[in-house]
Each structure stands twice: as C-alpha cells, then as structure tokens.
Length: 290
Ligand code: FVH
Image (tube, rainbow, N blue to C red; front, side, top):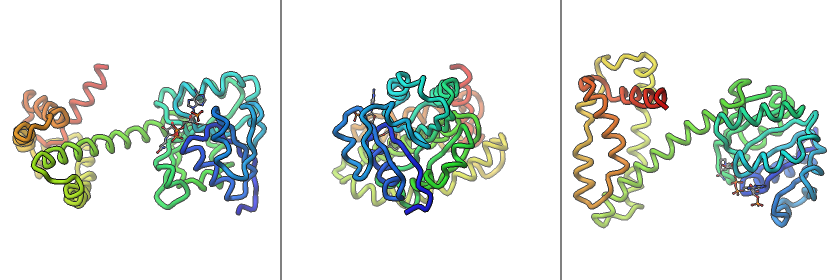
C-alpha cells in the first residue's frame, strides 16, 4: 500500500494494461479503467469502470496502453478538447516518429506527455527484472515516479519523446534476430530428429557465453577501426558451411542468407581481412540510402 494515493486512469485493458492497472490497485491508488470492449474492464477487481474515455480523464495521471499508434489516436482524438492540463503516459508500442507525433499532438491539446517502452511481459510487471524506458516530459516522470516504479525500473532517455521507443525497438530487433537464429538452428538439427528442447538446452549456455562478446564488438564499432588486431576477420566469418549444411538438411537458408550477404558486401568491397563487426557499415549505408 502507498501512503500517497493518486487517481490513476487506464485506457486499454489488454493483457498489459490489465497488469499495469492491477499493480496500481494493489498499491492503493484510486484506479479507474476504460476499455473499448467493456467486458474486459471487469478484469481488474476494485477498479472503478469508466463508461467513456471522457469519464476516465478526471485523474492525476492517464495511462494509455493500447494496441498501436493508430488506436491511441482513435481513442484520444475524440476527447482532445478535454486534455488541457492532463498528464499522459503512453505505454503503447509505437515507432520513434509515432511517439514524437503523439507528443506534439498531446502538447498541442494542452497535455504533458511521457512516452514509454515496456521491456517486460505482462507476467513480469512489478517483478524484479522489469524495466520501462521513458522519454518526453520529465515532470510527468518525476511527479509519478512512485507509480511508474510499481511496474518496473523506470529509465529516462531525455526530452525527445522518440528515444524510449528507439531503445525499445533496437533491443527488440536484437531479440527477434537472436530468436530467428535459434529457430534456424533448431530446424537444422530437427531435420536429423533432434527435439527442439534438446537443442535449447545446448543453445542456452552457448548464447550466454557468446553475449560476453558484445562489449568487445561495441568497442570496435565505437572506435570505428576494424583493423585492430585480435578481431575475427570477415573472411574467417564467411558462413558458407552453415548455408551448405542448412541446404543438406533441407532447411531454408533465408535467415542465414541475410548474414552471409552482409559479410560478402564487405569482403567484395575489399575489407575481407578486417573484423566481422564491419558489417554494421553495410547496415548504416542502407539506413542512409533509405
Ligand atoms: N504483451 C506484451 O508482452 C507486450 C510487452 C511489451 C509492450 N507491449 C505493448 O503494449 C501494448 C498493449 O499490449 P497488450 O499486451 O495489452 O495487447 P492486447 O492484449 O492485444 O490489448 C490491446 C488493447 O488495445 C485495445 N485496442 C486495440 N485497438 C483499439 C482501438 N482501435 N480502439 C480502442 N482500443 C483498441 C484493445 O481493446 P479491445 O480489443 O479489448 O476492445 C486492448 O485493450 C501494445 O502496444 C504492445 O506492443 C506488450
């Protein structure tokens, strides 16, 4: 229970919104909930159910946790005239540009806006290890830190409302590519009858050991010198054997082809004896070309 009860409203009671609202109720905050599908609003015991979005706006803090950028506008646009003085934290996943657009829109409506990127699953909310990234109006974070910390460690990335989303999506990209690599390996050994569970037991310590290499790669990237001795060269990193073994197993090479293409782009440009981390230069040039 908290000593200082705040009036917190939640717009959106999907899996995540319900977990956030439940934590607020448990901490003793006067919690109001609204959800498009009204039946879901009953999922948070002891919360007051608002019949409309407008009725949920009478709160110290309005927490938005909807499906995507578009749904945030669909919910908030009709009540824009009533947002003057509102303090909003939006935990809906959006792109950085989407977060900036929402921040500008909310400020134009007279509200303060803090954007958030949740680095946790609903089951992790309030448990050790849950982190939430924030950027935008710092005063919202400072004034409601005790509420925000109910859900996970709050980390602030500055006034640019897009930064939390940028960090969030960058970390998610690392996660998705790693999982895709695991699925590829599981398909390779799976074609030989090895259960994915057996492969997972082997992949876990291997990937944990390999992540220890990240700071070393980061040092090379930040130093922008791929000729520093001790790096695994691009020629050595050629993954032709992995591509061939995948084909032999009858497994699609889509996942590994991407990595092989990035390696060969650098080799073809004459950098074969430089370090593997140089493939980031190919990614950066794609970014510039876009
Ligand atoms: N669940 C997770 O593991 C991840 C962890 C990281 C952060 N994400 C993001 O959190 C946002 C909400 O996710 P969620 O898990 O709560 O998602 P759902 O259970 O699918 O609930 C979606 C809610 O959004 C409502 N909604 C959708 N479209 C509209 C709309 N046009 N107008 C009004 N509400 C809308 C939906 O309402 P209903 O379908 O029940 O009527 C749910 O309340 C999300 O950005 C994740 O990326 C979660």
